[in-house]
Image: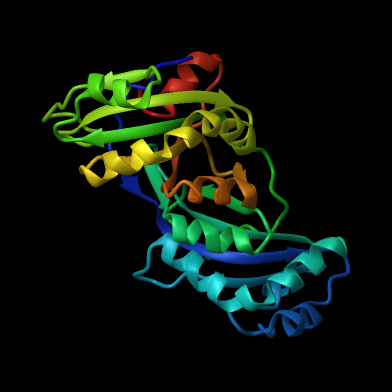
Length: 285
């Protein structure tokens, strides 16, 4: 296990948008729009003229990505059963969230939003663009390579965090602790405690981490009531060609614990870098 150093400066994803994507060879965009109650011409409902593609996008200026996700869910939540029907008919259906995410960029999804997205029954696809703009919309093509060097962590921070006390109360050993450091780039003035795991997909990460976290729900709630900031954070290296597939059940599992789920993007390793340094660099080690 590579110890996370948490030295990166957190920042928000920029130039973001959220898009419901339906793909299939021979797709009838107008029929899809009619079934979902979002006719072509409404928020790029015709797929921008791309054959086999139907989009419903919300990239509202001034709103953060979680709010944009909520707006897409608002538009189709009552037709979630139609989304599942489309998937059963061979359509590739996903909720794509895209934006410009430099190293240390964090997308945090609160439990209520995670549950709403999960209720659609389609995966969440995170797409990172490294240019000045996300090319105006979410990628319409099929998801390609996934983020690399994935880790997941139960992350706890607080200005006066007592790492030994957190360890005693939770009954699990941390993989990393740090005392409050006023000059630290990561949450200056806050102490850190984290328990981590590694894997090749979001599902495998949470399969390894959440069985350790779920029995701690009561104590985690008590820590939150005392002012600790607690989240499940998935981190990995990503570039413009990569996606991160987040299954709906994974969102629901974290939300059921009442914890925010965050995604931290880092740069893709260049030639010759091995797994160990690459994984830690996702968190800025």
